[in-house]
Length: 121
Length: 419
Ligand SMILES: Cc1cc2nc3c(=O)[nH]c(=O)nc-3n(C[C@H](O)[C@H](O)[C@H](O)COP(=O)(O)OP(=O)(O)OC[C@H]3O[C@@H](n4cnc5c(N)ncnc54)[C@H](O)[C@@H]3O)c2cc1C
Ligand code: SF4
Image 1 (cartoon, chains in turn blue, orange):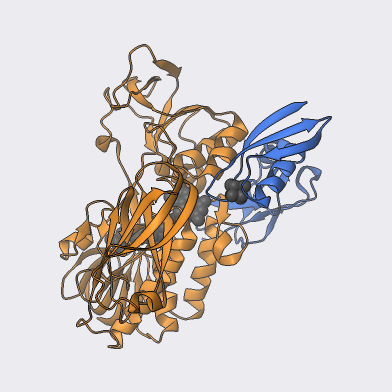
Image 2 (tube, protein in one colour):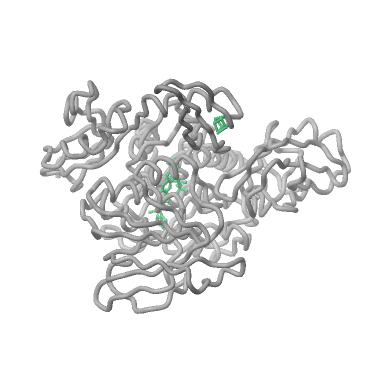
């Protein structure tokens, strides 16, 4: 049996969760105050995901950089791959919120989209 | 120049206040912003986690700001960018300056203060050693990385576990820097739980509680940092030093409401929040001058900023339309036993909203405790909370109906008690 300790991020309480696992299966979650903590713990130990945010340079814009994000969450272990795939990316102004910067980034099925409007200089 | 309402600051507070004032019938509104764009600090907060309460989805800072900027534009609310307010007077004359108009004055019927806050500087922290390059406030680093696209350093130590520092620990790690440690003077973190998990734990960055920076090496540029544990007296304990070779120190040691303008106008400031003392309508001691957002008290969630600002906008509209009178009775709201302050500080039962939200922070971590509300000496409500920490804002709702049952009420006290 394996035990993992987590902090629930579901609300400011930040309950300290203990997850008991056997053969990669969750046996028991304790320490949570509400159902949300249980759901969070099960996902976090089996399939943790995150939204990744960063910014990329813009050509000819009124701002030098445009912020962007993965449109949905991606597996946590792909965070660095996603950042790497943006390394040499530079896009042309104008940019609008929601514009796709990279589609299906690292085969996650998720697009990277702009989160800011940048006008032409 | 004459405007019914002048709003100082075009961040989330100023924007939401403007929208609410327009929705409540005010036509002549001017927002003044010193930066080159609207949105305030949100423009550099490119991470997600904004707007969960308001929009039921997780937005990034710029996306959240754009929802309000769009409303301001749709409603044709006037704004001036690259314009700095230099002075406001008690009789509500606003003096501002920009490159095209030079110095100019505006007569306002009402003013909303929405200037936000600034970071505590190193001077306020008293770290010994030289002042080499490579020491940045976390917010400055955030601006450099996210807006200018410039990385301040490669090996980083962060002092202070406020949210900006935590967010920057992750941001700089993703951009290829090595974040060696976060040191926090207090025995608890000042940041949100979520940020500790997703910005430090995710990247195995150690957080040292009850630690501080005791030495900065390097003359031209930072070359090394030494941290040490502190005792209950907050003095370093010999023998606990940890040394890091690094080129950058980020300071994330809290925010201070920016109230130089307010003070010069004679607005009374609460020494605990460093923000104005306000009543339930978010009006300061000067009639017709209102405050909201981080200039009033430091917020961690922008949703609460927008709610508070909408309230300020609505009340400023009422004031301009002559719907408020100063002849109403005021009840003091007192913060005691673990509650550091409350916003508002006074309420006017005759004109207050039906459900009034009183926000506050606690002074230390409380476990298995309760928030108690007293009307004079009578306990009115008690709500248990498993954990309360200074880093998270708390609230109680006061009902007008309930207050009306106590015609002789003189003060309301909010305190922390055993559950
Ligand atoms: C790094 C960081 C991370 C955060 N993360 C989150 C998060 O994940 N989720 C969340 O909900 N909230 C978060 N917040 C909190 C939220 O962003 C703030 O509470 C909110 O932006 C405050 O809004 P404001 O309008 O009061 O202040 P600001 O956004 O600071 O706006 C004030 C504006 O006033 C202008 N101004 C000041 N003085 C003058 C003058 N004299 N003349 C003209 N203009 C002036 C400034 O230029 C600025 O644009 C974060 C805050 C920071 C700093
Ligand atoms: S378990 Fe429930 S109460 Fe505890 S932190 Fe998670 S969401 Fe909040």
